Length: 294
Image (tube, rainbow, N blue to C red; front, top):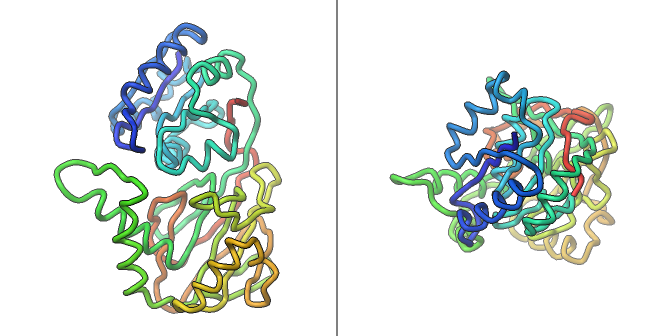
């Protein structure tokens, strides 16, 4: 059995039509399948060990949020494939998944897999796996505001790039840029913004951590020391030019375990979802994800 975990709200296209096309190709080339549109039904099935014993692969059909949710629900060892149908689709782009139903169905039928690392972030009372990145600071505040807006109202709201505009403006106006202290082994750094990455690119394909890899058994970290809007503008220009890692007020490193703490709680996000606030413990989980090779 193949499970397709689909999100009807992600991206700007007609996801039901696109997933129906994918389902036809999967059924023709790879065998029986079950398409799940409801998040609660999906979580219940993925948690059912007896039902999942016959599952060959889970296909996450949605954006990075859908991929992140499925990764956190996926039974260990069950292969994952991705059909990109979101706004950014960073995970799909990083690992070679295209919006091509026939190509994905062929990859699932072939069954070739590779092992990828995951990060594990723990805050008081909960933990979360991440495949792309964790960050603390302004961008996590934007994610927090967006999630609050998305979940308000009678129905879940569809998120597009334009959905971020108001929340970016509100965060820029109200966020106070408190410093975060990062401990990575014997190395310590402090700054206004921190990114811990398992992949090279961030939103809009910005290469914040160009050396990060998802199969090297470690996590790459970057700390931008100065806070405030002027510093943020300077850093943004350096990032767009690919010169930020050369700056004396930007600290970088690689580690298998990290701790983030702050005098006042600082918002934290993982793979585009709010996690809470500091303190947070982070560690790499080598080879924790089995991924279909596209």
